[in-house]
Image (cartoon, rainbow, N blue to C red; front, top):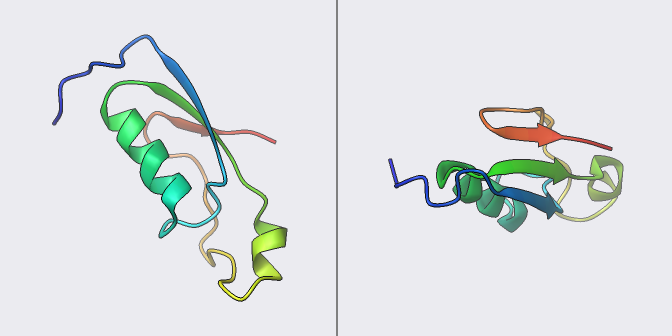
Length: 68
């Protein structure tokens, strides 16, 4: 596990609607580095696009907290 260099820091990451996307990877890495991460996504928009929405949904895991 990487050193918690971001412990005590807060990050907001938008565009985290798919687990295979860039936003999710960024949020996950920030959390691994110790940051408290708030994520935002709009899955109904992704569902209308060619890449589609994450069928499992996002939900919270670890140190990431979703909000609307």
